[in-house]
Image (cartoon, rainbow, N blue to C red):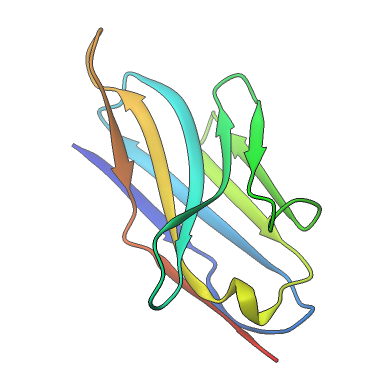
Length: 120
C-alpha cells in the first residue's frame, strides 16, 4: 500500500508564492517519476510538472518560468515551488507517483489533493 501526503496549499494573493510538498510512503520498489497535477472547477485534471528518477523535468506551458519541481529521494518527497501566482492557478493540486510495486509491474498513485486559491 502506498500513501501520498500533500501539504503547503492555501490562500495567497496574486503575485505571491507557495511551496507544495508531497511525501510518499509504503511499498514502492522503485519510483519512475513524481509529479504534480491540478484540477480547477469545471475543468479536467491537467499536468503541471513531473520529474523522473533521473532528474529530468517536464512542465506545462503555464508553469514554465514560474514553477519549479524538485525531489528529495532520501526523504521520498517531491516539491513544487510556485511563484508569480495568478487566479488562473487556483485549483486542487494532486501529487502523483509512478512506481514499481513488483519487478515488472508499475502503477500510478495519487494524493488526496491540496487546495490552492489565488485571490486577485
